[in-house]
Image (cartoon, rainbow, N blue to C red):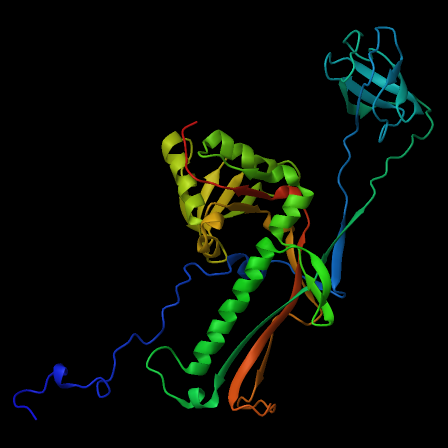
Length: 398
């Protein structure tokens, strides 16, 4: 017993009603799965088998390389290969700018030509000299020329099954909480966040495999980074201790060498970690050659704009990249128009709950819960339009 005014110090721990914000703060700035989120606004595909793919064709630009020297009067050239060369092609000798026209294919390593077709006189051609096609020309009443064929290449990926579960005892379900919504609503929301983050990580870091696990078929899908590494290895770079503007431009400009839409904008989304973002800012500040301008995508994501001579990059700091120091120094440039996800049939994020109101299933356990399941794969239709940079550590002048 005490006298005086009853103040908060008189409250016992059990008696005092605790004061908390009404909602639990979720520490995932700017979304934990921005690229997966973007896919909801991009074109998607439907896979009808667990192996899903597409066909690609890469434009041919004929050229040949001499493997032996040719004198001024020589009309037979020995080359490393005559693949994709047909009579009537005009070839430009890279070392002299002389034009020659191909008359016949003698063998897989030999062609006959007419020299000096144009204003540049014939001179000796050394070994190891490249000749690039600069068109074709035919005489009047000529025979139909041989055709060039671009063979389609089949590219496949495997669907991966993603599953995340939430569950709380029925006692917890019935218990009132002082933070968040309800135990059920919070558990559902946590499960959805884990599900999206797991898919997001696989979209970036997945590696294709298939086998047997627990006696059942098991598959994992290729993600962006592995697709680029395997199919566009020249677009994977590792920065040194410092990176200047010229080096950064060299790492990134390769993504504009090959396009599926010549009329499309030369623009990429570039995801990076916090350290990578600091490197971009430092390069801009030190060089004064560009400025990172803040903006917001139509998907609601905050970005900064980085421009090179050949294109524009929308730089987005990816929260998952900041979960370890290696990823924090990464940057991944993505060509959104040629990136797809494909869902197997109707397995686009299904939610199945048990022991819930209006859900007839009862598994005999005194608990409620649910499982999110998604079966999907990625389709990177133009790997050469994407890029990966590792080890962005510090910006430099230059």
